[in-house]
Image 1 (cartoon, rainbow, N blue to C red):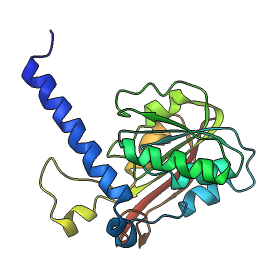
Image 2 (tube, rainbow, N blue to C red; image 1 turned 180 degrees about the vertical axis):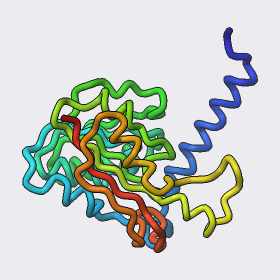
Image 3 (spheres, rainbow, N blue to C red; image 1 turned 45 degrees about the vertical axis):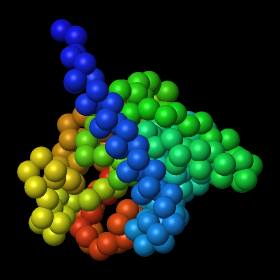
Image 4 (cartoon, one colour; image 1 turned 45 degrees about the horizontal axis):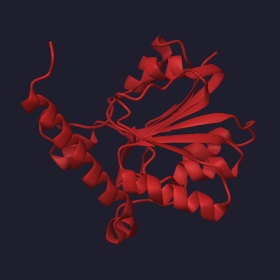
Amino acid sequence: MNSSPSTVHSAEQELAEQRRRWNQAFLDKQWRKTRFNPEPNTLLVDAVSGRTPGAALDVNMGEGRNALYLARQGWQVTGVDVADQALAFARERAAQQGVQLTTIEQNTITYDWGSKWDLVLLCYADEDAHAARAWEALRPGGLVVFENFHADVNQVWGSKLGKQVGFATNELKNLYTAAGFQVLRYEEPVGVADFTRETHRLVRLIAQKP
């Protein structure tokens, strides 16, 4: 059954609102100063230390802080996001730093991840665990690096039903183990989130496809 014009219009409006919101979050000077960590994610830095660079997919890349770090280490990086201005910002910085970076403006829900990656990065990407998609996307031996909020944050934020974020205790570990991954590192520390710069309980996962 084809979607009605009103449904299509509503989906386009939602995508436009997402693009506007995330462009602001990544590029607004006040946001960058008070709510956003411009440095590469520490879990990612730990995960790739000493690892031979390969092909990396940064899901919902944003303004490119992690993708650019990987590119500087010799990785061939593709970043996907709906925030067109943030992607343009990342490309500009890549040119300034003399590194290669491929950017794709697309919703990661509909984007075909393929099956060619040595690393998939899910750093405050969205509210999906993506275990099955990551399995299909990775080559044997490839890594998933995943950081996001623990579901406890909903109590702090007073999140409404249908608007809740984060992952329950051991949820990610169990999902990635069930998908066939070897979990190399899993933790749920209280720490400063890369996104919001607030101190909350987080979830951190490094998993490898055998």
